[in-house]
Length: 405
Image (tube, rainbow, N blue to C red; front, side, top):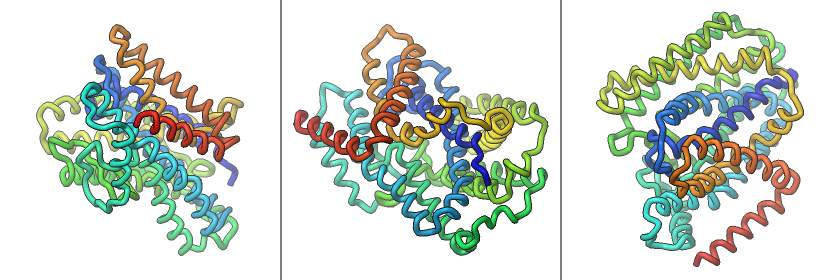
């Protein structure tokens, strides 16, 4: 099967929107624990966060699942897993010691800068000591060892390991192209799968919310030792979307089969669902009830399904080619995701003291500068000189640690 270019395009678009999401958090009220919170805020950013947070990560997991079969067939089980551990596991090991303690320290620094009890090197050492803990359960402190934004990569690596075991049992590595001989899927069957994914996502989200969330911790995260960290309310949804990506490749959704529905139906459905989502979110936050939560998660789950269809149908018909800029962004999107987090935080920190500045101007600066800086570092440093970049980065980090002692 020829590479589906529009999914490469959608992947880099989703990554850029992740940067937008992280930039927006500082200027909204939905995430009070964010590491750098600006004094100003606007409801616009809460709406933007609610929108993007509903579909970004499911889309990225679906795209990863779609390309998993072809990678497994090309490389075989051993080289497939080696490649995934090299591409996902090694950056996690390199990135977490730099990013996670730095982000957590910024949380304390921005809230009590004049009363820091410990230096950054002391905090870093205490934070990283927890990497040896085998804690399994809800994370209850900002100071708990965490993966920061690398959680996406560690969970994706877990999905790839599970997928490799399944694909190995199905002998997909022994037949050059076992998928191409299979039947395509009818539009009705695709629609049933989409509805099932929406329903199961809603049920799993509601169940996990009731089991793990509390008034003091409404958005809980769970750690499985130092290896995996995820939101329990979403992990089943991510697994479903990854699996749906595998099915989409296996049944040729984007080459021979087509998602049914008039081009206007899916965007209109997404709009109606999002209006419903907005109508229930404020009452839910002001006066919690299980009924309101159930309505909220169903609206959000099916809004995500609709946005998946909107993006894939639009991109398949209008964006299945690669411009020069698109190719550059597609090649660098993986590293942009890894690099952007601290860039966003430090830019937000730099603008906190600008008391007279509009939050919209600050947001625009953070988004544009973060994308440009992350792309520049990826394109001119990380991709051509990965080892030298890591050595230089850790050299700078050690120098900062020494100077801060």
